[in-house]
Length: 218
Image: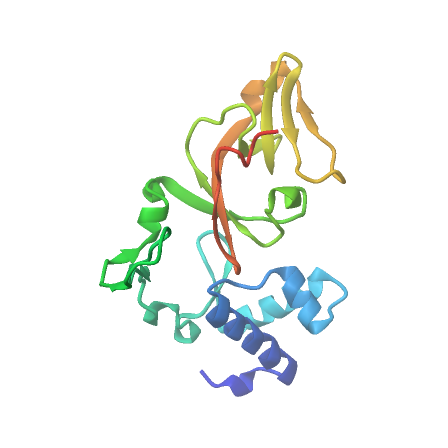
């Protein structure tokens, strides 16, 4: 496909997405794109995406998400590897360095239940004090959510990632940001709440962060 089909601004827009994805392994958020090109409205981002879709530079996935057309996506050429373990290091008294090939740290090692895991991308800042920010990918697993756990729920056609508390007065969905209000769901509508998954960690450009037992407790 000939890039001359794109206008100058469309090519700059497309090149930014390709470069960002190659460097970070993920797409930029609408907010990041808008800031890059000083768009005043997210609609400008959508209009550019739709133009690239129409010209064949993007495709739509089964989940109705935008993705690079196969001829422009280099992700398939990058081998999936772990982090190499190159030896031993003492954490007590000084010892002789030991170099050895001890294998790799893989996602399967970090998350033993990875086969049951999926991710959702965060939109909003209600969990920022739990170090979960807009644009992060939260890792969820189908598991029981205990009192105080962070989880994703579906209620009244809307989804939310919150700390969940059970009580006689109802279900409390508590944000980790004082600028947001708690969501209280009355006991008689509990059956209308669908738990989408328990939070076990999140991923962003800074790295992979696993949930610990103390992360979701007061």
